Length: 272
Image (cartoon, rainbow, N blue to C red; front, side, top):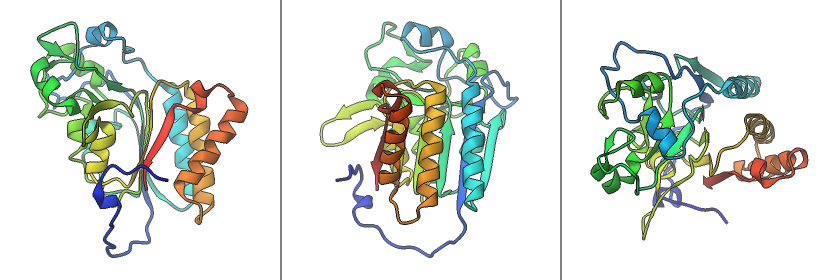
């Protein structure tokens, strides 16, 4: 049994084949990178992250090791891999991707509930607008996110390093078999009757992804890296094995090393 969120996954139309396997990997963003094009744009502020119970934008060195390990596995399996680290792991680079087979993003993620202490602003966005559109209350943080946040002005039209689910929905993922969101709480969102979960999950599906791997809570860096290595090694080494089965086997592998479900149970996969 597989969980589907869009009708397009039930009836797929086959297009022209393409034997080239491509992957885009983003990791270890330089959150303090100041882009000349940011133009004082921001969706969040760091104080708000603390008030709402989210971690500050500290560097994640484990995501660099994870991204490089995933790159090495994919390269060995003859993927054409484009790895973006540091300042290159930016919102503008993400928005330029063109339907890679695999998109892997290792960085901070966020999800905000609709009831906040401040009535006027939610992570820099007008609270009324964010309550009306839950796609503005979840997202990913890429290069320049902290630098933009310190400027304290909201502008969804600028590349400020914070990719909301609303913006992710507009990515070109038409030929993307899998999106991996290796960040905390990327699987959370707002449930709307008859419409499923509104958040990053829905956004990447609307953008065209066939399946998404995401997390429901924050996971320790090393455990996440080991899970990703196990998953890609199993899946890409066994062409006849579905990614869902490979994911389950990877979870069981990590469970043997980290018995607590806190480490291996956070990630889920939805889609085909």
